[in-house]
Image 1 (tube, rainbow, N blue to C red):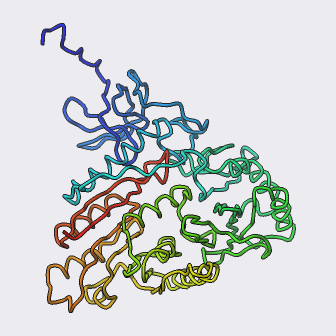
Image 2: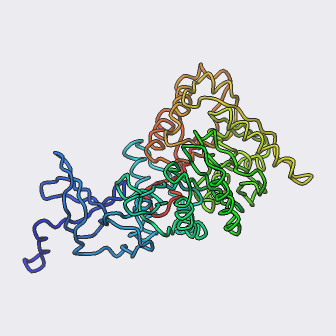
Image 3: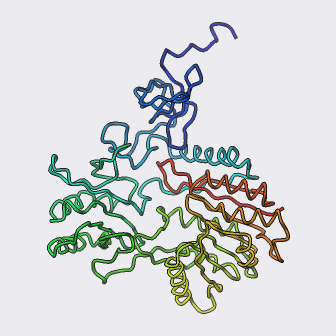
Amino acid sequence: MTDKQLPAPHPEGWLEIESLDIEAQGVARRPDGKVVFIDGALPGELVTARVQRKKNNWEQASLVEVHRESAQRVRPRCPHFGLHEGACGGCKMQHLHVGAQVAIKQRVLEDNLWHLGKVRPGAMLPAIEGPAWGYRWRARFSVRHVRKKETVLVGFHERKSRYVADIRECHVVPKHVSDLLLPLRALIGSMEAIETCPQIELACGDRVTALVLRHLEPLSAGDLAKLRAFARTHAAAGVQWWLQPKGPDSVHLLDADGEELAYTLPEYGIAMPFRPTDFTQVNPHINRVLVDRAIRLLDPQRSERVIDWFCGLGNFTLPLATRAGEVLGIEGSEALVARSRENYQRNQSARPAGDALAPARFEARNLFEMSPEQLVADGIAERWLVDPPREGAFALAKAVADLHQDPSLRKGWRPPRRIVYVSCNPATLARDAGLLVHQGGYACTAAGVVNMFPHTAHVESIAVFELP
């Protein structure tokens, strides 16, 4: 290469972005190798940045100027998104094309599986994608009376701040919920309890928009009347008020009449009633596809027994009961198990003759203290569905590995031929995958991402493990 062909050096202080980290920050390196994390910068860009925090091996910086823009940079739809003071912190990646977001999440999954678990999947599954806007059917809005501005704010926190952002619209929640933000501000501003209602939690069902008002003091008759009037005014949006005077268990309907809060899994003929503080998937569009893919990958047969670990309300258990011969759902809470059992019985009663669900039972157990002996006591199941919280399923994977390493513990028990693992944390998935593959005798035959939370750095994924 001649001197004329050599690339010109970047001006002093300019940084080239190599990648994005798990927090959606651009990653660059200074000439001395020091890593710089830059909020708002994208891979391939040349930028200048202002250092906010310095450590020996890395720096935290904010974006000042983009000198060479990424082809994947897009104009954010939401006017409240950005790096400026007061910007909403609800999304981190609206400035990146949604297809590139998915590709980056796929890379995060692959990197975690390899670097943390030393596991390479046999195949990468196509990403599960859905609507990029209006997808968020669950949210927790903070409420703040700002006396200096003589206004009430209802929304997410500002970026990297404890303050509530002054948002007037939100494009990741359904349009009818975004349209409620300003009326909710006016409602709270008119109430006697203006200072003692710190939060409104949103939970949408197929036909109901549940709003859970957290209130620190008992509400007056006048305030209750205003809540009822608000629900009547916004009846077309399906608004239904729930009250939360204390912890999550204190949540109750303001008025007992009205439609039931529920979502459906139409492909399986399943309806799932739930309470607004129950854990359900944020994105119902993706959840339907995820349930279907998980069951197709698991491929249960009518002659087989399946265990659904961390079964929750039965999101996977009930659809599995339309395909398998028998299902056992296990969860850590007696209350959740009771709700799962009730959902199963209701759906069983509602099914047409000749289309009954397979037998299912539900048990409560501390799944973070599993042992090989308990696993043997649970009996043989040909297939497992595992859907843990962010902490993962380490104790379960460790018990499988211990039984594989010491056959004398098995007492006739044999491991499932196939495991489908749905994860909301690629790091704990990678840790558990390492155990299953290197100590449990399994091969990771496939893995892929699930874009459950577009425009955020959250990585949901699914992986398949099989015995050779």
